[in-house]
Amino acid sequence: MSKLILTHEVTGLGAAGDIVEVKNGYARNYLLPRGFALTWSKGGEKQVQSIKAARAARAHASVEAAQAQAAALSAKPVKLVVKAGESGRLFGTVKAEDVAKAVEAAGLGAIDKRKVELPAHIKSVGTYTANVRLHEDVAAVINLDVVSS
Image (tube, rainbow, N blue to C red; front, side, top):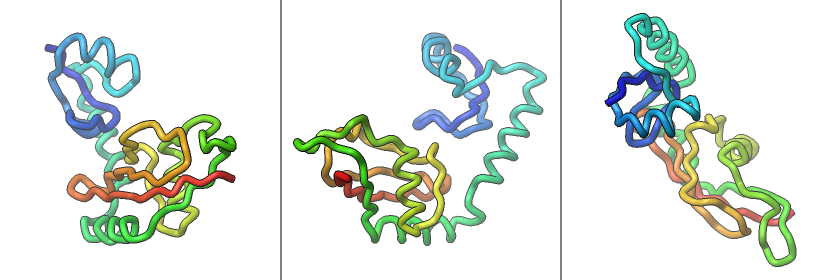
């Protein structure tokens, strides 16, 4: 088992700044190469404090504010205009950054692209859903209308 400090939030494992123990292969092949974690050391306490301070600065001020934004995101579908061919197939794929920009352009507030979870690759026009973790205890479902430009 490897002891690691998470630098990014990993679904099902923990949030940035958490100290976790995972199997060696998972750490060596997935978390460390992608920069999601650092190896734990006794001097890593400063890193943990700085990561937690940065996470707190990006987080919503309160659960109530996050719940209010979640209600607004769930109530109104977000229109996402992308380039597509005549058959409706996209030139590329929709990324979490595209969803975050579309939400901000729709006037529903700013969300962090790292908090957006797309269930599958979006490669054609249509209606889709995406999950957004606004707070540790609050998640919202966004309805996406992907249309051709």
